[in-house]
Image (cartoon, rainbow, N blue to C red):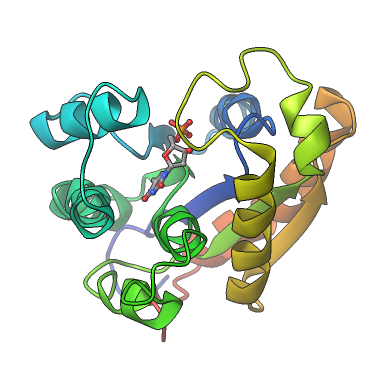
Length: 215
Ligand code: TMP
């Protein structure tokens, strides 16, 4: 990096169905990166702490009902309200590890099969946001996710719907995605995640450009 600017941080998104272990792996990789001197933080989407996030939370807990287009746009707005801070952190050299991002936004809504909420339309609403340098897609069968503790508490935690979400994620994959079998042990998965994430962080530090969704 000879420009005199601070090297940028990497944007890394973890995606997958509900209860597949994303949150655990996000925490572990952030802890690992920090232990090696990398400035890293973990964020979750939806961010339930904002007022938009609280409306989303009520919807997910089935305490409120909303039109599919409206809840979709709230999820988008919940990312957009964090956009400036996201770009500022990345430019300042902080690596951001996201527990869900735009890919969940597109996959979950497209999985509903509402004709006017096509995958292409959903993708178009995300274009103001940066693309992840790496998407870690954690996969397991919807049946094994359902066998995990707490499953079924939220709106989308139903086996049939999760199969459709899985298919939608598969349709979104490109060369920036790494697919990891989420049925292994926490430590085995963490080891795989580490070997995939570290080169991406180095690439960002070395100045490779941040992209835009879905260029
Ligand atoms: P969480 O359990 O990871 O907090 O995610 C909450 C639920 O919201 C999960 O079922 C996935 C869903 N979701 C969307 O439908 N659209 C989105 O944009 C995001 C980020 C999550």
